[in-house]
Amino acid sequence: MQKKLLSGLFWLLLANLIVKPLWILGIEVGVQNAVGNSAYGFYFSIFNLAYIFNILLDLGITNFNTRNIAQHPQLITKHLSGILSIKLLLFVFYLIVTFTVGALMGYGSDEFRLLAWLTVAQFLNSFILYLRSNFEGLLLFKWDSLFSVLDRVLMILICGFLLWAPKFSIYNLQFTIYHFVYAQVAAYALTAFLALVVIAHKAKFRRLQWNWRFFLVILRKSAPFALLVLLMASYNRIDPILLRSLASDADAGIYAGAFRLLDALTMVCYLVSVPLLPIFSKLCKEQKSAPTNSSLIIHHSSLQDTLRLVFWPLMLFAMGTAMACALFAEPLMNLLYPGRGALYVPAFRVVIFGLIPIAITYIFGTLLTAGGHLRQLNIFAATTLVLNIVVNLLLIPHFGAEGSAWASLTAQSFMALAQLLLAIRLFHLPPATFRLPRLYVIKELSRQIFEKD
Image (cartoon, rainbow, N blue to C red):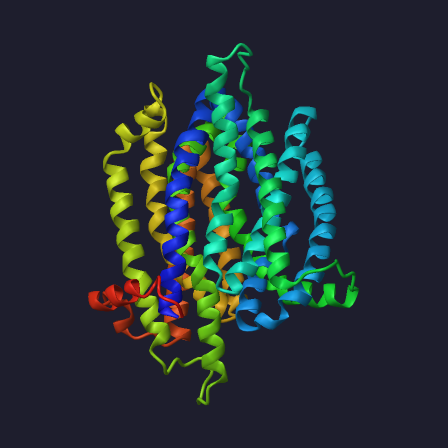
């Protein structure tokens, strides 16, 4: 399992560390600089509304599917046929709910036009994530790595042309925020089609199956995952929505600019968690099926060794990067936003330290999810959401984007600490779990990555 973990991490990190920085620091920054803070803040707040309700497109099916296929790979053909049908029905439900909320928030024609395209983009992105969950469950990490970056590669090519090529052509196009959204939809659509072709071949998929009993069973099993994703998306993404309501589009744009680098760095933590979920799921299944006095006590050292293998590298990355970014906040912001960097520095110096609790959450939240402890995680997430809203309401009127950054850091820290303490208690993790792994173990496992199983 440790060999599989290192192999998965290698390919995911290699692909994403090449592509994602170009996307976030090149294209997204280029777009915000091209359209301005107000236009980008307008887009970012509506994007986050569409993102929060993204869970209605999935209802926890993706995380459930990764865990389930990892434990029962023989079910992939049956589940793929049925779940694809569910995804189409959920898209209709998502459209109804999202547009209803938009109407209740007083959206006009401009907001609804942008929201319509963003809902299509969110559906395609959710569809890709579900298809990738099948690759992850089967431990086909090379395919997963390819489709984790293909959409961004396509967006970089399209947006790069729209942003810079017109300067050297006779068309002299004026780049708007809608061009950015159109590029996302086109890239997601092509990536979803190619991923579907590959996984359909792997699973010997032939046709959709409309089985209402199967739908209800899957939705019932995935419901706790759905609630968890909804609550986590809410406390992670509600800040710019509250900023736009309590302050202005410009404040939301400043927060978006300060948040961008954290969003890019968080991708490293997320990528570590991708192979962790199926691997933790397999370890938990093997432990539960083994003869033991308690299904919660881990007698074998595999889980502890796996945790030790990822904990300190990720924590050293998170702590070192957060401190370095805070120390060099001003030159970093001036590099990203020439002439306007000072606007983002106060919020950035606060929000960047959220990388540390986020790293903890991606490790121990993934372990608790694999172990099926969804009830406790949902309680923690609901408490975190309330905490985030309360702190935002208290601080935004006085400190604007910086106050929202403090609210985000407070919420993330609470969630991380709660998950860490719960994992230690439930899995009886000894202090040795948090020691640095022996270097020769990492070297030996790394040597075996390219060897055949």
